[in-house]
Image 1 (spheres, rainbow, N blue to C red):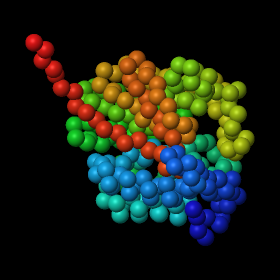
Image 2 (image 1 turned 90 degrees about the horizontal axis):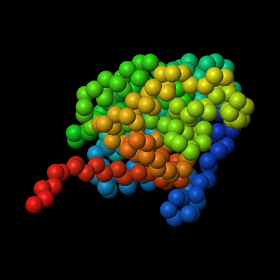
Image 3 (image 1 turned 90 degrees about the vertical axis):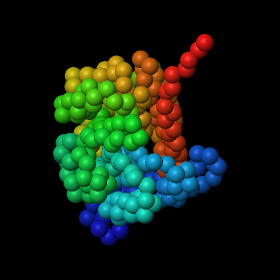
Image 4 (image 1 turned 135 degrees about the horizontal axis):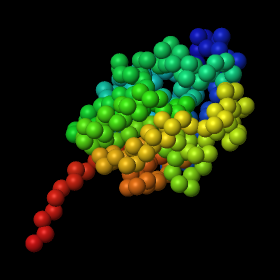
Length: 269
């Protein structure tokens, strides 16, 4: 979705603007499209009377002003609180030169800020009915020192936490698409940088901070779950008792309806 404001950026957005015009609905198996699926999901959320909608990135194929305005308007019109974290496509113009971290910051500042309601796009939390939801941007696959400190501070609160990110954490046996702290994430295994017209992954792989981030999550007694997207396929992994749920992409209508059931003590006589 775009308009005349995209004209000067078409050389960076052409491949992704040509993608996903028709998708296959995850349930009905009929043809659909991302806009129809997005509106259908909002309608379902309204009918279910959900407390909030969490959007975990790649809502946009590139930072199109028209698409961002359209999504924000429909979300705002729903009256349902919504919370967003970036995916790699949301801010990426293919072939635009520069370090990924700088390009991410540029297009968040220039286009995507309206999605964050004043929250820090890199890290923020939302308290909801006794739960604390952590939204952390790992859309470059890497974690910053500030994000690690934020996570550690939240773990120290002892509040029940759910971690929301775009790219799933490495899980044993998963491929490098589960790339946040994957031991094989490095330039020699980056087979998409030419297609996506971006810098390749670092030669030496992840920073120690990113590995520490994963360890903190899977060893924290108060992290109840991790939710992510990115790979476009539904999956479940459990890491040291922490479940990680990955959803199918919403362009095919998929979503998770997450229900938190408080644990109650049972007296046995």
